[in-house]
Length: 316
Ligand code: GLV
Image (cartoon, rainbow, N blue to C red):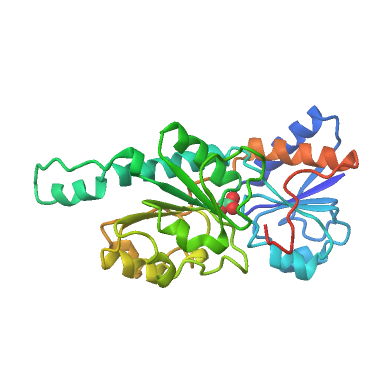
């Protein structure tokens, strides 16, 4: 079978070597090609990150497309128009959950230990111990509880913070997976009102685009802290900047923006209580991702449906 890889962020040979190795372990024989170098070659399976529309449109015999990341918002519209009916399959954790948990916990601890307040005091050489909020009342709200959200939730639970979550359906993916209060999206205002820290890990869909605007974010309690490591377009970053400037929000740690890169002139860059990282919270790891994709292909070959098949109606 032929696998075509389109990944502008990674040297092709890294994918080829890892895929060939894992295919061998599964007794599958694969021919891996660089879709950028051989755009006219037809493939059975594609592994892509933001592929060009013309290339996807020219692929006539695809059995499935694997998205080389957790969020499928960049590729799903192309699939709808140029490969309708071809299953789109996303990575499920594949080493990203652990990175996301690290990122979120660092930001939660930063907020809890009042590091922005200490940075402000340091700027004036001021030695002043501040009151630490009680951990038991420091509620962390997870907006989105997919693989990334659950990885963050498990680690935050180890840190003994009280957790709550809000998801589209308000139902856990697996029974007992999340033991805190769980709200459905209809109850977003009630959920937000309880969060000392809001962790946004929603997929970007028609329903979540600009979900968090000024009025919605204002429902967070005064002094709340925001972490967004999902997709930039889920919130209105100008409204967020206003709320931090007004002091309603105490600060934010942001990994994702709309657009990316965040334009150099944007005021968020210069806000002392806003920390910015360039979409690095959870990066695709070639080894674990190639292993996972090959296992999913093996499942397809056995006539099974692998995990991570995207529901085009839901958009994730
Ligand atoms: C990164 O943003 C991903 O979707 O994996």
